[in-house]
Image (cartoon, rainbow, N blue to C red):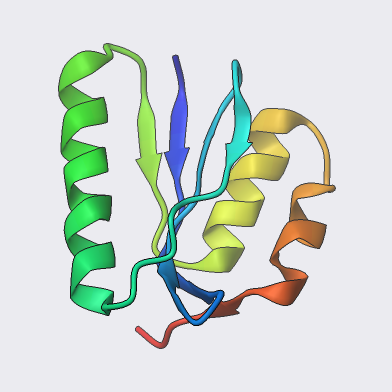
Length: 91
């Protein structure tokens, strides 16, 4: 199963990251109150996905990279609309 993990964004007064798979589509992540918790959870997700699956995984650092990967993999540009309400964190 191909997996795309998005960057950490601000959402609902907290910090979250999203992921996408062909089987389940876009999964919105939990909004953590502390950015450190969001970073820890994202790293744990990347590590666990990498060891469980033999298929490629993409960990994106920016919203542009994430939406481009979704548009390429999903074959649609509709992924860009999801990110109009979220704010990317500065690198």
